[in-house]
Amino acid sequence: MRILVAVDSFKGSLTADEAVHWLGQGLMKGARVEVDPCPLADGGEGTSALVERYLGGRRVMAPTVDSFGRPRPGWWVRWGRTAVIESAVGSGYLPPADRPASVWHTTSRGTGMLVHHAQQAPDIDRVIVTLGGTGAVDGGMGFLEALGVEFYDRDGHRLSGTAGHLERVHRIRWPDALPSLVGLYDTFVPLLGPTGAVRLYGPQKGVTPQDVEPLERHLAHFAHVLQDSLNQSDLMDRPGAGAAGGMGLAIYALGGRLEAGAPAVAQWMDLASRLERADWVITGEGRLDAQSLLGKVVGTVLNQARARRRPVLAVAGALPADLSPFYQAGLTAAWPLVSGPMTVEEAMRDAPRLLQQLGENFARVLMYGDYA
Image (cartoon, rainbow, N blue to C red; front, top):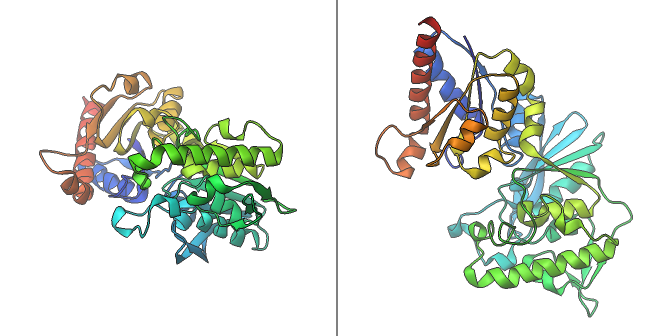
C-alpha cells in the first residue's frame, strides 16, 4: 500500500517537512506501507525551504531589515534562473514582546531589499515573492521604496516607507525600470473592508481597536494615490491586494501578478502524478477552518485527490464543529491531533509524538481494511 503524506506546516509547532517525517515514522511503525513524503506550503512561510530541500534550490545570504526597520541577516533561494523570496524573512511577524513600537512604525522594506539583492544576481530572470507571515501593514510602501520608488508629501519632502506615512503621500516618482514579479498568496485577502489587511489581519500584527479606522483610511488614501500615479483604477480591488499587509497591492503596481500559492507549490512538488500512484492520501495543517478550502493546502489536496478518486484522511490541531463542507470537498475522515485533555502549549510541544501516534493508528486501520 502506498500512502501519500501531503501536509502543510503546523504553525508555531512543526514545519511541513517535520510533520511529514513524524507521520511517516508512525505509518511505517504501524504496518508495512510505502510512504511518499510530500510536504507542501500555501505560498507563505516555508515555501522557499521546500524549494531549497526538495527542488534543488540554493540559499543566498543577503542583508535586510525586520518589520521595524532594524538590520538583520536575510536570505533568498536561487532556483535555476528563478529567485524565491519569502516576505516573512525580510519583514516577518514579530511577537508582541519583540515589537519596539506601534504598528504605525512597521515597514515592508526588508522584503523589497531582498528582491533588489536577487535582481542584481547574474542569470536571475524571474522573481517569486511568497506573501505570508509578515508583520507590517504599510500597503507595500516600504517594499516599493526599497525598489527605487520615491514618495513625497504636499511640501515636496521625501517620505520613508512606513505605515505612519501612508496618509501623507501626495506624489510618487517611479524609476525608469521596474521589476516584474510574481506573488504567491495563501488567502484571497482584499486590501480594504472587514476581511482586509487592516480589519481582519491587522490585529495579529499590532493594530489596536483605536488604530483600525485611521489605518484603514490611510491605506485607502495611499492606494488611490498609487492608482492615480499609474493611471489605473482597479489595483486595490484585485484579488490578494491585501496580502502581506498590502504587499500584494505593491506587486500589482509594479505590473506583476498574483497567484494562489498552494496550487503553485503543489505543481512544483508534482502532486498530481504522485496522487495517481497513491492508494491513500493524508493531509493536514494546524487548524481546519473555512479558510482551509479557499486556496490552502488541504483544499488543494482535496480538489486534486477527488478528481482522481483517491480517499483522503486529514489531521489537524483543531477541527471545526461541522466537517460537512470538507466531506463535500472529498474528505474521507478527519482526526484531531490531541489524544486527550491537554493545553494548546502541550499539544504544540508534543506534536511529534502525537503525529507519530496518529500515523501508526492510521496504518493499522488502513491495512486491516486492505486485508479484511
